[in-house]
Length: 88
Image 1 (cartoon, rainbow, N blue to C red):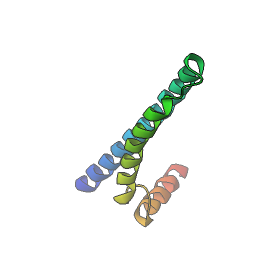
Image 2 (image 1 turned 90 degrees about the vertical axis):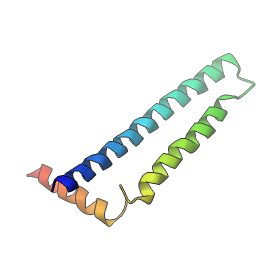
Image 3 (image 1 turned 30 degrees about the horizontal axis):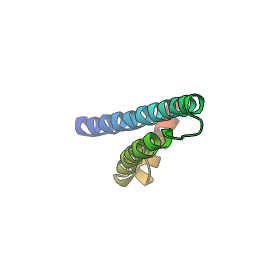
Image 4 (image 1 turned 135 degrees about the horizontal axis):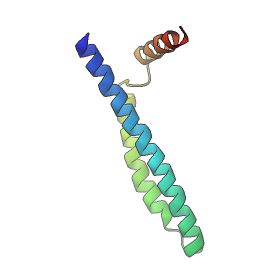
């Protein structure tokens, strides 16, 4: 049971890290877009950051998916069980 708990805890930590990374990615790139729009509207440079950082975010997300961390039958069953317990 302890091993199962530790694996679940690790998965949650990885998912939380991904969501944090995704949120920061979106906020920074929106900010860079606004700065680019105001400072140099004719020369678009913000998308370079968006593209290359986006590759990193996609890579991290693909890693989670490929390990069936939050997609697949096992994940669905765990989430269903979790929501059922919350409803009690």
